[in-house]
Image (cartoon, rainbow, N blue to C red; front, side, top):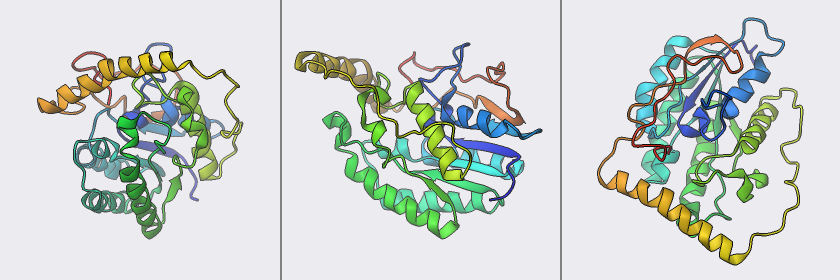
Length: 273
């Protein structure tokens, strides 16, 4: 792999880092955690994070890939298509054709490129678990695309630790801080970088929640997250509207640094997909 002096993260809320926050309340996430470790011992290392919550694949391609082409970084992470997958309808054949074309553009910049499979939803609520086949199909297509273009694949599907409910925030779409840390470790491993801890470490033993408590939690999730999402989609709300990239320029990584173009929430705190 080429020497890493710069890293640009491209994508949606997963890469923006929702539900893993810095002390000032701004999103952190696995990409910031990765950049912090890559910057250690690399004087002059720079990092940009262009990811914006709610973006569909075509929006990521239109808004973020031209910026990558101008920046010409050494490393690019590309994770997009998840918001398309969870939509009411999704043609995975069409989605992968557009993903493959976008990946080709990023690879043409000369960067080392990493992509991500989707998560295994086998232990999720039935409303999410119904998407498991769609995710699995898209994963295999992405693996084939990565092989064609010589990219590395971060296998989130195979990370069994992410099947634990403790890996997921209350909306069941975004990772907790501990899970973001495990993803960062997995990416380091994929890149062949030193890994300070094992992402496979089991979660601490815990007693299973009583049946009634699980049912009440499911009802709260449907009320507080599923129904608001459905209402937004039915009224044609534009995903990610009003949010800006948190680190729009390649700059030295400074943990907890002030964010000038901090993303803004739209339609209240539930607009986080």
